[in-house]
Image 1 (cartoon, rainbow, N blue to C red):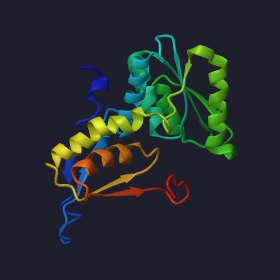
Image 2 (image 1 turned 90 degrees about the horizontal axis):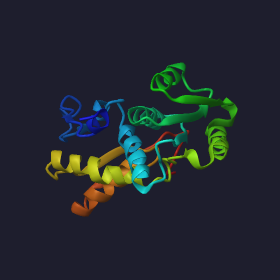
Image 3 (image 1 turned 135 degrees about the vertical axis):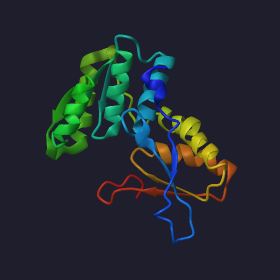
Image 4 (image 1 turned 90 degrees about the vertical axis):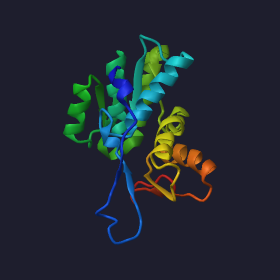
Length: 208
């Protein structure tokens, strides 16, 4: 087994103390058991492997992505494991600890002006794509179909199996929307009564 194959199959842990007097059972899908401690490890591997299969990612390709979160860490990790060069653009406001981790994983980091936010990082990534020509590959996590698809094939099936199909409600934080989309689509087909709840930051909403 290589390290990428250790992604997924994370445990479901029941939060017994939290639900002691409320009459409900709550289970946590412990995605921090992934190699880089995030659910984003799943999409990092999925997007790279999908690009390998369709030929858009070649041995000499350069992976370029604007990111401020765990997807960048996941991409850096997968690129390091597979031998691809990885360039990540991000606002200069990102923590030094995050930058250090990305550099330790072998990624090149290009910082953009903080006031420009992610828009500045996206613009810089587009510029780098032009500079690298045919060698550049941008996963585009928000638009990449491999994102929700990996959750349909893995996360959803793991939850369904672990819960033996007994799921009344699925709650997920929303960044790209890949997790809640992929998991909900699969489980709702089998249990139409299940409720899906999306949680998003007030200052950075995706849905509302």
